[in-house]
Amino acid sequence: MSPPPPDRAPAHGGTRPALLTGWGRTAPTAARVARPRTAEQVAEALSRAGARGALARGLGRSYGDAAQAAGGLVLDCTALTGPIRLDTARGEATAPAGTTLGGLVAHLLRHGYFVPVAPGTGQVTLGGAVAADVHGKNHHADSSIGAHVRALTLVTPDGSARALGPEGDGSELFWATVGGMGLTGVVTEVTLAVFPVETAYMRVDTDRTAGLDATLELMSRPASDRRYSVCWVDLLAAGGAMGRGVFTRADHARIGDLPSTLRREPLRHRPGTVLAAPPWAPPGLLNRWTVGAFNAAYLRAAPRRRRGEAQPLAGFFHPLDAVRGWNRMYGPRGLVQYQFVVPFGAEGTLAAVMERLSRAGAPSFLAVLKRMGEPTPGPLSFPRPGWTLAVDLPADLPGLGRLLDALDERLLEAGGRLYLAKDSRARAETVHAMYPELPAWRRVRDRADPGGVLVSDLARRLRLV
Ligand SMILES: Cc1cc2nc3c(=O)[nH]c(=O)nc-3n(C[C@H](O)[C@H](O)[C@H](O)COP(=O)(O)OP(=O)(O)OC[C@H]3O[C@@H](n4cnc5c(N)ncnc54)[C@H](O)[C@@H]3O)c2cc1C
Image (cartoon, rainbow, N blue to C red; front, side):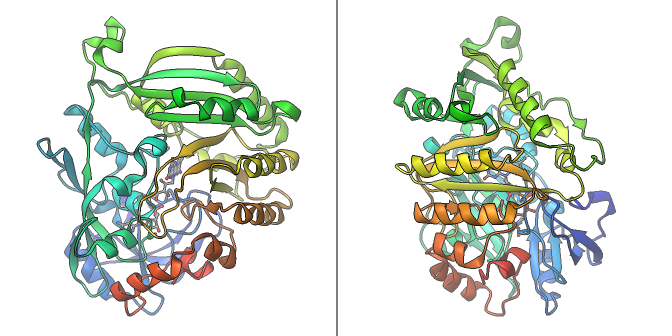
């Protein structure tokens, strides 16, 4: 139930029925799927939306129900592709919204350029990245992708293709679209600021940490302010070791940073070997013991302290892309990703939430902890200055719903919030309290879609529209 393979999608004009889920493979719902190739075909498809509405979908890498619309028309935007235009004088690239981030990176590196924000997988479309206002390991330094979008084209249900930018006329709708989870229209083209790089490698420093205090202390040091930083944290370690992890910091490597063997082709991109995960997994494969053993082995294999290692970009930014379909390892019930941000100063809440997850024996592969910096003006954009933690959990873990509801309350008290692109289970009231700008966003959205055509399962569940 991952996204439909392109070769099975209907030619433009037709629709096919499909059962859709997000990356977590929970809560499938049925929809008709169309596959437009141009902005005109998007407008035409939107005009054919029935009473159950319509919604854009990218590569289905949001974890929950953001890219599905039960009973409605889903526009698979992965065929919105075409040439990428790189303007080196302006430092920007313009691409159709169905372009994958991985494809854009491969193209840009050939010319010695890179994207301003790279989320944990290259398997997302540009449209999906803007709709979720995605962040990467450099949020503390560079904010989220919306801060680097210079222009976008948005097709709204009235059929118009609007050229929008971050300032001036149309900026309100622009910012409602950045992080707006597809509910303001269909993005068909994006112009993104890009920057030059000398090599396709990162210069990486690695430190192993002994527990949560040590992890946070290291991540808070000013000297940690490399452009990129992330910590893989072991939530299954007990007692004082809880929160131990592998902290990596990196900058783009310059030619002089590379060993001589790599200097001959410094921009050679190595997307990495792609292995396929087994098509099915026995229920219970991932439990406290198997995952705990994996985490311990991962930590042991990491260097205690290493400086200046040259790592290929793909391995640094998208390690999970090396295993195709890894989400199937969670078995037929799927997985839930719990990602939140709490403000700086709320480290006590961060520690308490981690301890609750640890005590519940939640078999989580290493959780990902990052620092966040300046937000964008997008009213529904997730990032806020503070600490963000992302944890994958088996959806059938006993008591998971109650546990996460209780954690939501803690987050709310501390001024934290959940990430809509990852959510599949939160309550509407909780999310409304976490996103106080929701009513302002709704006013802008309602002007763009007065007929209420655009809708998703996420929007219905959380009463966003
Ligand atoms: C392994 C993995 C790692 C990840 N790491 C990160 C990370 O580090 N940081 C981060 O921020 N996110 C991360 N994500 C989440 C992912 O970046 C977002 O969910 C992203 O939105 C997925 O893009 P997609 O093309 O698959 O969109 P989908 O999941 O198909 O759709 C997501 C949303 O975008 C909307 N949308 C899609 N296309 C368009 C369009 N053309 N116009 C308007 N709206 C559209 C949909 O309606 C939906 O609301 C990760 C996901 C995975 C699976």
